[in-house]
Amino acid sequence: MPRTVRALWEGQAGGFGETSRTFWYEAFVPDPIASIDPALPLSTAEAVAEGERALLDLSGTATLVGLEAMSRQLLRAESVASSRIEGLSLSHRRLAKAMFDPAQADRTARGVVGNISAMERAIELGARADGIDVAALLELHRLLFVGTEDERFAGQIRESQNWLGGSSINPRRAEFIPPPAAEVRFLLDDLCLFVNRADLPPVAQAAIAHAQFETIHPFADGNGRVGRALIHVILRRRDVARTYVPPISLVLVGNGTSYVEGLTLFRAGDLAGWVTRFAHVARDSTVLARRLCEALAGLQASWRETAGKPRRSSAAQRLIQLLAGRPIVDIPSAATNLGVSYPQAREAVLRLEAAGVLRQATIGRRRNRAWEAPALLDLLDAFESEALTPTRSGQQRRSPVLRR
Image 1 (cartoon, rainbow, N blue to C red):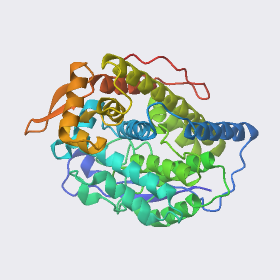
Image 2: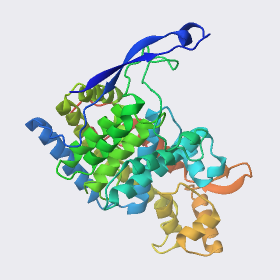
Image 3: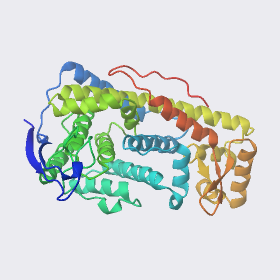
Image 4: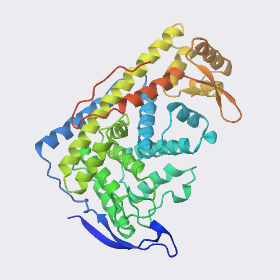
């Protein structure tokens, strides 16, 4: 059974008000899960199977926008949503500019770019044949904070008590208090043993591992983002998310209350309640991914029309395909990615600019000359906005047509 540990919080000598308070508090310590054998009811097992089928079907989807473009946009949508849960919010235009010129990114943009790097690393870890260990989790955390003001905490397990909710001064009014720091390393080792198992349904395994990680809360900051990256480690390792990163965090953001309630169910021992909710999230994420694919394909078709239907092998046509995954380009990067000369890339860029597909954008302090695809950036923001509409637990998500 889970247990609580009673500990003394010592107020600061000479402090004032809340900072001077000394009191006892109770930290929650979850059961180890390495050898857990969850007995899930039939309804939960059916929800898990439905979620896995949806993920596998998504991996087999042939997209009109191309594998790379679709993968990049789904990865970015997932990373932006995961960051939003942590209070880091920005438009896809700001993100695209930060990706194009990282040196000029502001603090928020750097945080989201770090989340993208961590998610990319999660995919690599998931595809790896050997097991996941604590060092791999620390590497994911380190990537989140590279280049940020909190880089000194990157990749380090916390050494003090943390808490969720209430005051930032002390845990007296906290909504949840994770295990004491002395318990964290053992629980992380145990979690990695669980992650490396192959005898559980993948969606159920991802649900339990994520909830356990969030309960341990092993870092001073960035726990949510690493915990959501861990979901993708498992789904890729278990070969149910073979091609794309399903935007699970996007659904969790849109159903934030249900998400918190689900984690509370898990901590109370209701595995079925939490796993069922998570399975519905996995299913919903594939609906969002298909919507984004259809919207991107439709946008590309409209670009081809306004650009005068360029030949399939032309630089302009290939640039249209490139833009679906890279919304901001300059002529040198276009030439490199298209494998054409500078004059050919320039001609393609100017043709799409004349057609209204591209417009000039100023990037960075040096006012570097670049072009952005405004309709794509607007579409991505609209997609995220519509996807954040909450759904009732178990309710199929509708698929409204995105405005372009």
